[in-house]
Length: 88
Image (cartoon, rainbow, N blue to C red; front, side, top):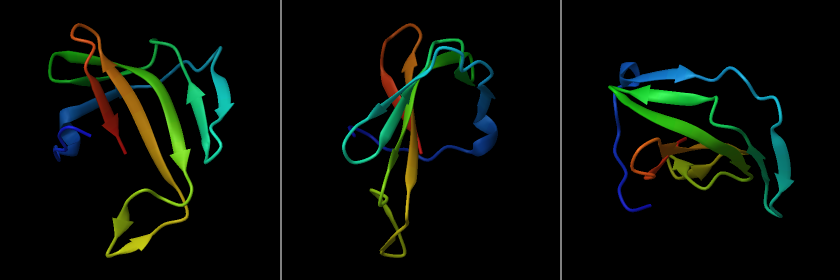
């Protein structure tokens, strides 16, 4: 991760509607679901297409120093710049 930032939750508008054609991949330490660009999130005027979401077990991050059983990351790509952003 190059940069991590917290954002107010009302800054995000989710449009996750169509998972037809999604494929599931075993990554060896969890699983990943690849989806199409029909699913996206808007942050202001910017559209971020959902590429995939994946799970880690146990979690990669901690809460009060403790790992949880699982953590999910939603990986998006900016529709113009190609920059990646992860919501987790």
